[in-house]
Length: 293
Length: 337
Image: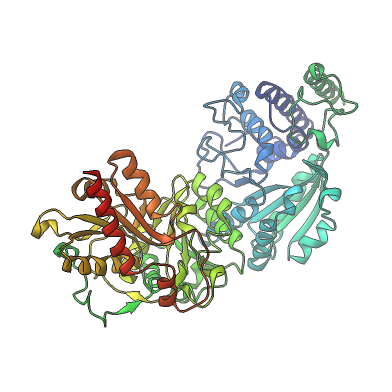
């Protein structure tokens, strides 16, 4: 079994280290997504170190909870968190996106044990999570399915087809989470394709909807606990997060959706050659601050 | 002439040969597959009766899932169920699945390498009055291009039944195309069926020396190929006929042997010439033992409304056209010699 962390300070410390590794691996890869992985680091830390029933030594353990990552492009955070949990050596993170790597640019099921499904093309994760949960339900399995989605992929019709079916079948062994960071590649979600009222939309599809602060470990953990207790409906949590969280020049800037440090020069960002160094410095400062709080 | 070991229907050339749609064979086969393995589940997108998934749905209600008119969701839910240890069959019309949901099939089934079985009914112009929107003519091309995918196009309803049971037993993604319209039942329960193994149904070489040419056909065109071979025999042209029910993986040995021994090939299918059986055979033969090939299929256009036989005639999928093509490849073969 994996080591469970209950102490919030320790979870914050872990998430900070994961963020530092995300920056390092993206710089090494020279391509990839920054904003989403940094924004989701707290949720991934909470999942792998507190919420999920899993065993890094036995990735195919039949009783494990199944974590489906629908928006595969934020995989650096999954890889980094899995490395910290013991699924792979931390040193392997620097192989991200390189020839022969297990850490494909978008996650591939058969490349790395512990990746439940291949993803990247948006809008198909929730359907797969519904199918997996149905399979578990037929077999009276105890394990649960968790599906992480982006807000941008709520644009996809496939997502709503899945939402409708989950509502119809009252799939209560499924918990979905939407990373509501308000950005997508081309800009802010509400300019590209307005999603609000997202809560009302899911409620209309017969889901139990929770809204949480995606950087507050107590809220994240308690929401997953509540979801387990909802019997009549699937639960979705709209997790409000800050894209680029922890790196001041990336926070809330959609330009960092699909770029690693050092590749672009948005207004207000440090010079390209300094970006990685400044990002890591800021994260280390937060780490120090956390220690003294 | 007719290969005895094929155990074909004795009424093969009779005008009153039984006619059954291949979708009926699928419906029967799915019930048998579900009885054999309790992991078999079925998903349908509001076409349960029409795709003949009805019997399965009634017999195994706890293993049947109606997803509504949502083909993208149907195959991705199926992918998830396969991740959970199930063997899902999805059924719709081929223009919608795999027509509408190709990327989901590519990523979540083929690249993911999970055992989902995509059943595409109403393939070909023989769908009839519904018209071009409902006549799938590109499905083989779309599915054949995908790594890990197995593509099957049964010749009749009995073969469709056997194919359904066979694909349920293998752990790879599969696509099977079916027809709406009745077609002659040319095989019997005793006819051999093995995925990836093309069957030589007619082989003059066993009685009167090597055949002059080979017709490689799939789906209901196999019957027309046999009729063509019978017609040509009267004109002293001997033709080997191969039932190529598995389009991917292609039976390389049987097809290359035909190229080597007969030196001329005609292919026949109810599908676009682009990317179908003819394309697959050409890719294989041209790179290994080039011989003249003519492809009978749809010539880069859409279907239309009409009665099935009127349409098959209008689009050139006739016995006469197959025979003409055989004569053409024979001319090319002789010019080459």
